[in-house]
Image 1 (cartoon, one colour):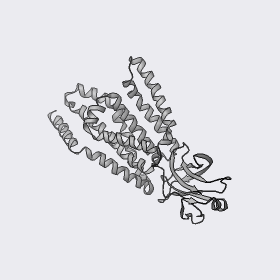
Image 2 (cartoon, helix red, strand yellow; image 1 turned 90 degrees about the horizontal axis):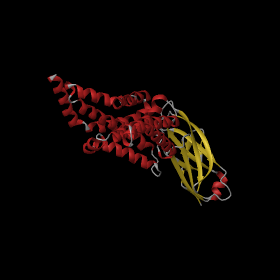
Image 3 (cartoon, helix red, strand yellow; image 1 turned 30 degrees about the vertical axis):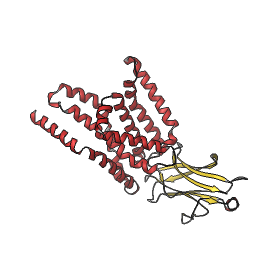
Image 4 (spheres, helix red, strand yellow; image 1 turned 180 degrees about the vertical axis):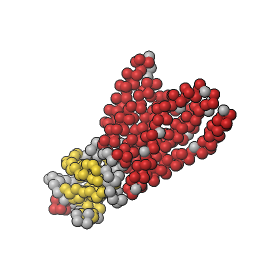
Length: 336
């Protein structure tokens, strides 16, 4: 019993000294997996499968704490469990952050989502905030669990099961909403019998809100590289001409314009994306394209538009969207 207590105290001391390396290690692991998903997808899948399994720590936390309170030889275990939870949150947020940073379209509302994930990640590193504010309030602690579940499923599911980005989004929303139920139950006032139905309703409303805000959620495993408008594309060599930012209406009417959009996706993943052509904010055409995850340089996709109407002058955008309307990237050009 003395040896067990000494071992636990030693583990706590080691964790207190080196725990901040978990955040750095998780971030570097995420960067490595972002590269591996293009080159050695089996290795990347092995790495990300560990994240969903660690949710067992969060689910079983109340039972471990009760056991620890009853057993003298587990007197350090409540603190150990809380350190494990901190490590879980750091692992989840810092591992997925590189995927979101790579997939974010920076001149869009997706910046707010990345900022929110970054806040969760930073709070999980700052002990006074994490232990005195988050861990001390069950509603906040389960909010962290829900955010970790959402971000992990969003980033890991397409790599693990080769499911589409849209399917992984709905799974992530479902996981986040399910794990948020205890957070709402702890935050809502009233008797126990009223709180849980209210928590279920609040979780359903959260899922609905996330589905409506999906345009602001980056598709974690899809990212565009060197997207631009071009006057020509060599279809046999699958090579684009020079980038075009401004074009005359006469030139546009004579030759049309290409939207060149190489998209990175996990190897083995096949899904449909959409090129949405917009003129001064108004949608004029939506063209579906099927992509497959393969090449390191990205799956080279393009659309060629020749009909631009009587007066095409103004600002144009070609928005690359998933089937769930998540924004992958934007090509901009101006017609004079």
